[in-house]
Length: 489
Image (cartoon, rainbow, N blue to C red; front, side, top):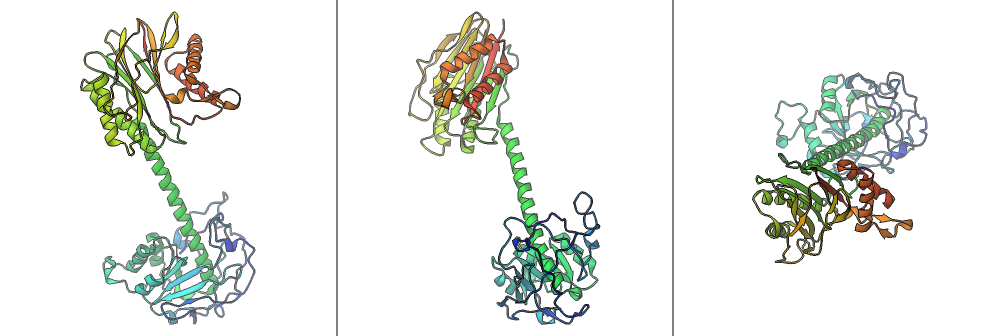
């Protein structure tokens, strides 16, 4: 027996108007001498004229709970008498506005109950096609068919592969044949258990052969089509949510965990991708400590903002960590990373900028390599924060074959904060009309002010990213990554 239909379930657009009350077609009440009319040939497609429609009936108390949701009755507890009153659902977007088409699969259509006229509430006929077997049904199952009425007594094909003892083998075959169509199962009167099992297998509803008439079948067709559409929409939504959750877990897992065990340096990082609702962009960063006590930090940016760029950034970050732990640094390290980029990029025009810093075990000096990337910001007590030298900035990775990247030695001092960042932090718009870029000078001034206010570490990075966003007048279009290493005496 069909499950109760919630009042809010969508129906075809043809049902959106008020239905006209009309007599049920199919002979006197209880008369089961007739059957579905239509061309008895397999290829017949009959549009039955007439003026049969049902009244828009008020929902019964047992069909809906106080909160408007369907009750918890089992599927076989709902009524299936010809005159059962079912609440008319609300119209749905995207429902068919033309004729509904029914494909009836019945080995003896002439012996079925007569239902001479099937119409929707607006008076449009529901077209009926008949097929004597599954082979004919497959030929008639075109895109304009909305619902299938299947006789469960129909012999299952030998190739169904469900076993001769499976009484629903024919239904399972049809469900595989027509996974996107609504299916109504037709069974013998009183065979509730088989009908309910058909619904559990995948049919939208089941009907008793001896109780069938035009009014009941018309309503069942429309509800079956809407149940199928609702099920498909819910399944797609669920799949979309699961896919988004999997992507989120994957992207979170791709963000690095700094390896600084045994180092006195403090680490903080902020990341904001430019893609809407993304967790990972083309920017990447990492920090590791090698066995000799040297702390290596890096930050980079793959041109572009899509998932391919994000994937390439992750590959470069992982390659950098592996090469660094293997003992490479400076020009040798960047040259190897350029080879990785050239082999992994999807287009020869894709490049990546990179900044690497290796801090000596005593923490007082560092080596700096720039590959087309903005220079880090160094803040020390007693003097204004300033950019490290960038005169020997080499080309971005992937631009020039055989390029070289000089390693510059810089003095840090006993106490310092070193901030590495991507260009997303300095390319935000500022001022009236947002015509100017913040630029490195604007960023340096902003960070100096925030340091004077006592901000440090994670708090400083959060304030910097938020202020740049506010100056831009909204979300930044480019990815932003920024990390900070602090050393206290």
